[in-house]
Image (cartoon, rainbow, N blue to C red; front, top):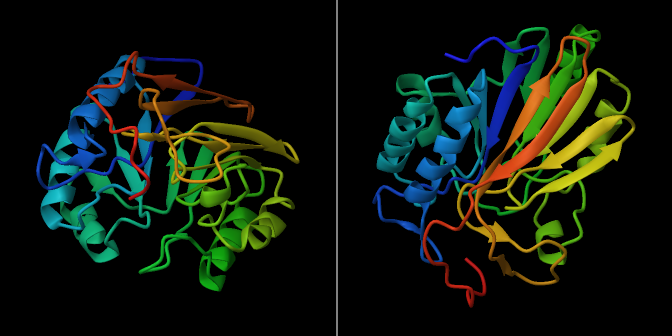
Length: 265
């Protein structure tokens, strides 16, 4: 169990892209091998809980969720997840019902809360937040106005400067921020999908993208381009006074070889 610290620590993992086949992977990199090495880094930090924000699996098979659940069980702390565009919502919910993964959309962690919103549109790569998701988020924020809050989703809600990725983020980020901007208890919004680190500020909120646990996408790219840097994860320190610290930790080297000439997937 995590040792006593003057803050609560969250580990954010994303875009694990696990296959039913343990040797399955993206562009030559074995997803499971990379995830296990990233988990070893996470374990050294002894977080209080782990969030995994989508693209949990890649081949839409129940066996892949079972493998992911088994791998994440090694963390020894609660693991919460939400869906990405590569996930099968029905299979994911079954896994959450019987495995180590949890699919709660509102999580209490000490004096803080974490709210997740579903940005997945079945059959599409890009995302959208429907009216029901936005209204539920609004109600939860209104109910807990004095509780510091993190909001997470899979798709990026802002343009990050990569043309090809910005075409497949959520298409109504303005509606999301019309809610968040009037709720100052929201200290950060974090997401996956973009396979790279991103950090900006908006009205006192930190806007955070986290590297994938497998392959990385090169920032500020017009077209699909892989980045030849190692996988990683993000840590977040949540203080009782609402103060938030965060950073990214990566493996020292890429665990294997990547086909750098790949043009998309």
